[in-house]
View 1 (cartoon, helix red, strand yellow):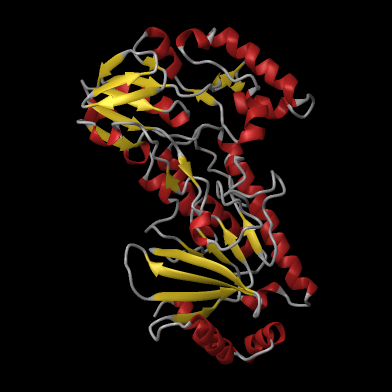
View 2: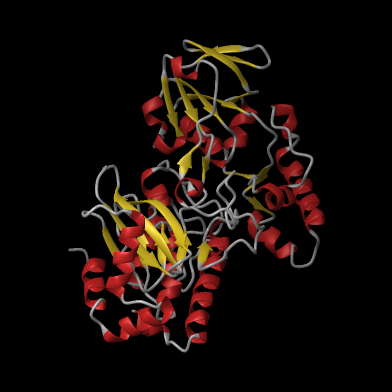
Length: 442
């Protein structure tokens, strides 16, 4: 029996919890589950478990941050994670050379800074170690290998009903119920596969960056990277450093900025300037410095958007590329730049400029998307189109009836921390307004 099943069995006979539940739901715990089972036509093998604290979906940085902030308030939570580890995107679906693109002070989770001996830009390994220590410090123990298949609000009983299933297995489902549901599955839950004519018939290797680890396996080979965001650019650099012959497809305009300017991180400098100057002035400054350091990127096939990098990030969520050495390789000709793909035939790729090249492999750096619309039955807080909050930052963290969003702000880990603190404070305030000390729900 898992620890939540055991604790719920005890709560079913706990007079304090029985009083709390009866006051809020108007019925006894056993009666509640019987009524729910009848309404939902639940099979005998399906269990119903009441959770007194919030349910959090996702054990990435966002889910961990919310759980830690709640724990500090005396509120326990239950985290479901479909994978077998915390931060599964970082641990299982990122390339080996990855490091944080922003300085560590902008990537800390609430209540615990990075170790003082960490570098300015922690590596993937260091960041994962930090997250594991974070979870241990706050006693966060996610329920692994459990996929949330459906979550919807029960308007009769005023509870969120969350159905889970063992990841990768069809069979018995378990339903959990809570007053609060926190969506922390992230903006990068599912890979985006582009529609490219002939891609399925390509005779070489095709992989998404989620499966790419190192360029060593491509030494001596011609590799086409599709997509010019931070991942695509860094994969090209990794391929180049491992004696492959990378080409990159630039399908859209892109802002490339040096990772550091004038002896400071570009991001940190931008945040400081924004305290005193409007966005469009800071954008102009960044572009002038970038032009002085990099030259005219358009001459190399990397045209800039008409909107500045910070304004574009605010409007669309599109992040500028923070260059860590790729641009020098493009300028030297070690990395070739191409426009979008017209078609693929065998190993030959034809581009929109009519040029054709043969390749041994294609790496799709085409990004990810949210999967919220596939399992959450709610059309108010989240958009069905992209699975992100409908309201712009910083107002997209809270919905109605105890529904919250964490880490889907397109503001990175800084946005995650802000969401987590607000969610924990809001839950605590609700409990105190009802005259209940949060610790009673532990």
